[in-house]
Structure formats: C-alpha cells, structure tokens
Length: 193
Image 1 (tube, rainbow, N blue to C red):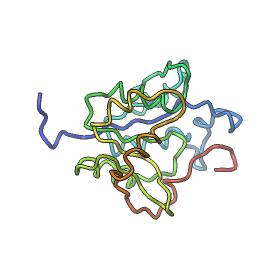
Image 2: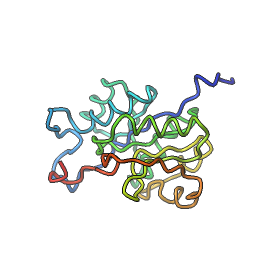
Image 3: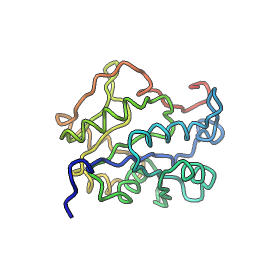
C-alpha cells in the first residue's frame, strides 16, 4: 500500500534498556528538579515530535515499561544476548520496520529540546539519509536514519550502537547546526544532574 506524503513519517525509538551501572540506582526513574523522572521527560519530548514512538526496555523492567506505556509509547522488551545499545537499536527498529526512517533518542538525555527532535525528523522527511544536531563540533542526539538503513540497524548487536553506520556514511550525514548543549548532555552519574 502506498501512503500519501502527508502520512510519511519516521518513527521515534527511545533507548531505555541500560543498566544504570555508573549512576548507583535506576537513573531513568530518578527525578529531575521539577520531579519528572528522567525517562519520562525524554519520552514526552520524543512523543511530542513523533507520535509513533517505541521504547526499548530491559526484559523485566516493569517500572520503566509501565511509565512509558502510560505516556503513550509502544513497549519493546529487548531480550537480546548480549545486551547493549546495538541490540536495543535492533529491537526498536525491528518493531517498527514499516516506518519511513527512525529518530533514535537516548532515555538518559532529558535536556534534549523538542526543536532538536523536530529538526532531525524534518531533515529525514526532506530526504536526508542521516541527520543529527551538531553542537561545538560534536555530533549530538537524537540521530535520524532514513528507511534505507533499516536492515543495517536491525542487524546491530551488542553494545556498539550505530556509530559504525554513521562512520561508513559520514558524507551522508546532514549536520544540523545547534547551539543548545542539551543535545550533548547525557546523565551517567548523579553529578551530571
């Protein structure tokens, strides 16, 4: 079935399957200054730009899964062994293979603004193969992948993430100039808050 251009849109993929080993507790449930859990802030931002979004969670992580499902995301439990970012991306993309690309966001990056997600999604809709915000000379998040990368993303494993895809196709990445450092700021330890 051919969809009308207005219906064509990438899916959001929120990676929320990490173990929080450096944080000391489940960082995704840790509240920000306004009381909102880190994962919920990240999820709401992604959903506001991409109503069709999936969240990849650890197998058995009921608290995070329930919170994200109530927020409106489709939940995908990643049972891959070994676990890792690559495996999580593969799970999320495989669960949304009919999408017209993917905007992959990290659940531990609650300071990414809606405008950044919208800019990446817009670049994909405009024909970009790959897109990401670029701040202070560094690639930020989220990162957008056109539908043509579906097989490569679904084939990822372990903890390597999609960096290898981005490196092999570096000349195809649309670099979106970005001033807000929220696209670089992830939460690894409590001091990052």
